[in-house]
Structure formats: structure tokens, C-alpha cells
Image (cartoon, rainbow, N blue to C red; front, side, top):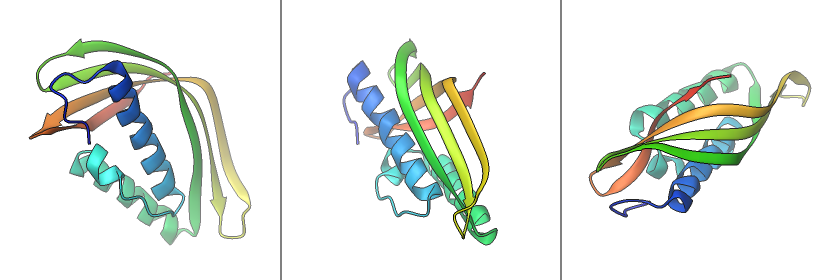
Length: 130
């Protein structure tokens, strides 16, 4: 967890990277212990619910998302907003490994809202805009 009073851009990037990795792991059916620490419970639960839905359909998602740029656009004592550009691709596959759908977005723009929860910073929400 990030506990700095005013996290650096590097720490914010690490937080978002941890979110992306944790979310990708869970949606791929892989356990991930860190997501609960980097995301608010409501956001964490949204990912878990999405995984349950995929699982009930016999599907999983393979997601590869890499940050190509980050720009902090708002900062206060308990809230940070960052515009991030991701190189993003995903595949939805069924239980026999067949690709059901595939998405490739070389420059996905996402605004992340990061909030301070007691002593540490967490992803509160995100908005994609392409």
C-alpha cells in the first residue's frame, strides 16, 4: 500500500500498475492478493463479480495493459486524478481455449480517481474515454 502524504508520480504509476495486474489476474481466474489493497472494496467487488459471471459462462479474460503515459491533473490531501494512456488488449476465451472476442486499443485513455482511505491510497474509480 502507498501511505505517503503526497505520493510521487512513480508511486501513483506503481498503484495503477498493481491495479491493472491484479484485475488481469482475477479476470484470468488467477488468485491475486494485492487487488484488495490497491482498490476500494466497491471496485474490487466489481472485478470479482465480473469474474463470477465469466466463470459461470465457462470463460475467462486475458488482459495485457501497459501504461505508456501518465499525467496528474488534480491533487488534494485525499484525492488524485490522473490521465493515463494504456497500450491495451484483451481476449475472451472459452474453456477449450477458443478465442471468442479480441480487443486491441494501442492508446486507450483512462482517467483514474485515487483516494486516500485512512492511511493508504487506493483506486476509487476509472473512466475510459476513447
